[in-house]
Structures are given as C-alpha cells and as structure tokens.
Length: 250
Ligand code: PEP
Image (cartoon, rainbow, N blue to C red; front, side, top):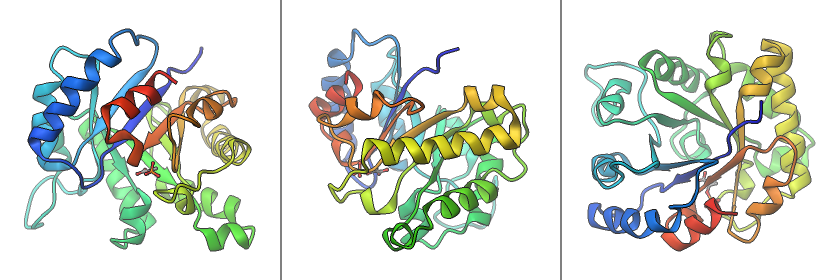
C-alpha cells in the first residue's frame, strides 16, 4: 500500500495570532485542489487555538512543536499531552534538533515524550539527525541508529507504523544548505531498515519518514522523487503561505 505523503510546517517561534489567521486564510484556497497528501501545521503553543479555529472544516492537520511527558503537576512553563489533545492537536514534533541542542534534551527524555504522546493519542514526529562534525567523522549512520534505538524504546509493534520519523541533519536546518537527495534517501533507507529489523515488514512499509533541512519550493520535488521519502518537515519556507502552498503542491 502506498504511503500518503505528509508535508509538515514547523513555524518554530514565529507569528502572532493575527498573522496565523491571515496565513491560514491565504493558504487554504491555494491548496483547495489537494486531496492525495496530508498537510500539517505545527504553530507555537500559544497559537494552536487560533490555527484550530482558522482551519475549521479544512483538511489542515494540527500539531505542536514540543510537550512534556507528565500529564499534570509542578512543571512551570510546560505543556502536557492532554492539553495538546484538548486543543485538538493530532501530531507533536519531538526531539527536534533545536530541542536537543539548544535546550539539552536527551534521547531518554525524548523517549519518555514519545511514549506519553502515544498514550495520549497523539502521533509523534520523532526527529533524528547527525551534526556536521559527526558527518565529517563518518558517524552519520551510528548517530541515526542510536537516536532511533533510544527514541522508540518501548513503542509497541502495533503502533510504531502510525508514527512519523523526520530525518533532519542538524547542519541542514535553517542554514540553506540542504542535504543531497541521495544523502536524504540513504539516511531514510537506513531508518526504514531499522524499523524493518526491529518491527517487521508491515511496520516498515507503513511508517512515514520525512526529510527536513532547508526544504524549499525549488528542491521539494527532487526529494519526493526519491524512493522512501514520504514528505517534508519544513521550517523557514513554511512561514509564507505562497511558499508553503508551493511546497505542498510540489
Ligand atoms: C525544521 O525546523 O525542522 C527545519 C527543517 O527548518 P528549515 O526548513 O528552516 O531548515
């Protein structure tokens, strides 16, 4: 069965409520004819409600960029899986490189979040990818496999196929220096092989694996032509409705 492409916007820490509403109003007509792929917007937490209101009766999917693994308690500044569900989120990005390298998140913490998201009925988008110095030391495969191994620990074989993985080499994020289609293909093939060996062929065939890192309207089609690349996780180029619509209609 062919996997349905997923094009996901990660707005990071950008936009006001009004800007988010204006974006959705301008973006929706541009993707009105799109039926055969999923389109997801992950706004900053304070804008989730506004995007949910603006997307009403549209095919846009809604996600968060992060969450904590506990359901409630004394965790000042954090957002729980249940709160995201209550705001109608369907997805949550976990282990983004900015969470790992700016906020010091470990694989162990990310795994707790993955398990909590699944328990709450959210679909985790688990981000993995090597840093430049790791690539230069030929450690790319080892880093990806290690992040996968620790990231999906304890995830049942009945649900792994519904998860999303994003291969995002750290050196390609927000730098304008995108990975070659071959490098993205090879990393994604490695991730799928990991899922195959750990969970079997039907999970490996089902799980969607995205590429992220300086994806632009000009290079999206090149990635989508590669066997095994099921879509994109897009930062900078998802902030403008024109640009994100072009990405969705690659
Ligand atoms: C991202 O935020 O996940 C990302 C890939 O950013 P950019 O597209 O700006 O490189």
